[in-house]
Length: 138
Image 1 (spheres, rainbow, N blue to C red):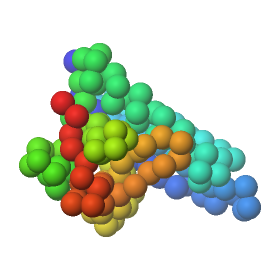
Image 2 (image 1 turned 90 degrees about the horizontal axis):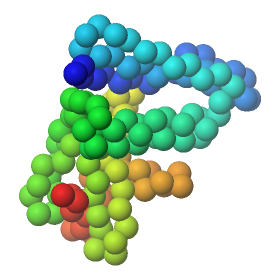
Image 3 (image 1 turned 45 degrees about the vertical axis):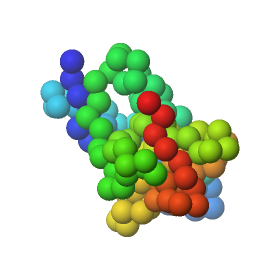
């Protein structure tokens, strides 16, 4: 089974007031490459589409239908568990979110996010600290 070894988001060109043209590049270890281009999408529409795709890929991997090489987050959860992209974390309130990684950000705290759905994306480092208190769901 092939493994995904790279996912990159590329902003190709501005489209005036209508948004940007983006591309999502996925590379597998067998030299297969996939590019998904999106035209006439606003930044928000693109992010929603991308998060949906990443969530679907992570779900396939969790079910054993796809073998994906995941990146390890630089932080541990509140109980000291290692965190990886695609993992689900849960707060004491019961709210859950999926850890996602964005290649296109240079700052480590911006690269690691938690997708809670409904366009609610937060920095991972803020969700696993003493205030956020989220832990990995096993």
